[in-house]
Length: 115
Image 1 (cartoon, rainbow, N blue to C red):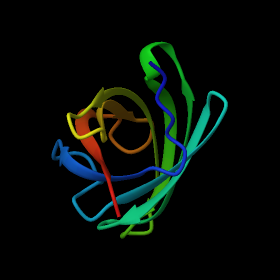
Image 2: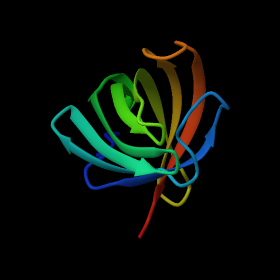
Image 3: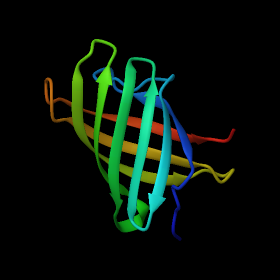
């Protein structure tokens, strides 16, 4: 089964303490073919972008960048595995690592929100 991320909106529901994405962070996803991109903002993130490619089992291999509330440019890599929830929404289980700052890694979960 193929997942289409185009036009989906996601919100963070869980993150490790070394992450900057929080409950106020909203992601707006777009997709064309196997290329996915998103703009995100909210909470400690002033403006962010990600680009990804869809890989096996509809997972996303992505790179992200944003400017945080301190004016710092932050970058990282992330691998997101989708889960279809009983109500049809998408939940993404993410393993990420900073490529800037302290280079630490973490886990997060974002879920599709229906507006």
